[in-house]
Image (tube, rainbow, N blue to C red; front, side, top):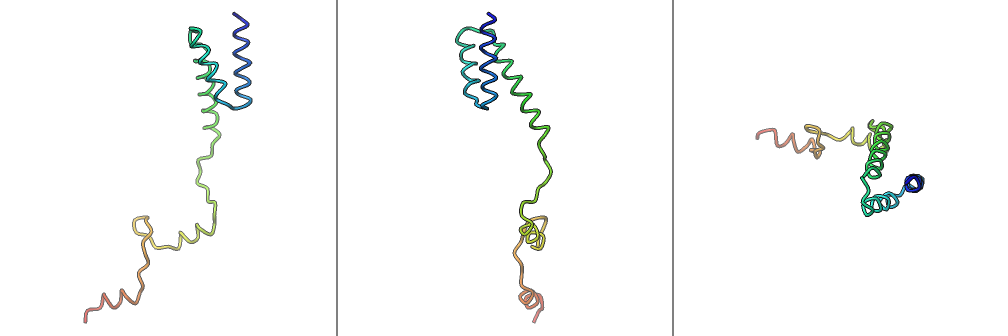
Length: 100
């Protein structure tokens, strides 16, 4: 019984080191095929959730400007309610607005 537990932990460590999901899937399939109680699957799920939470905690959600030139251009463009609109030439607006 203890040999099986050692085998699973070695495979889990190998899967973590490589970063591959296929090794974890093989462990899960093997456990399900042998009629395991699901503790292996549950421990893998807990480990995966902990890994996800740690990565999410470290992730930076701040806004990042990648190209300063694009930002400057976007700031200069006219907007209506936050959306870009086409520029209307001033000569056309003055001739249309003035009644004759």
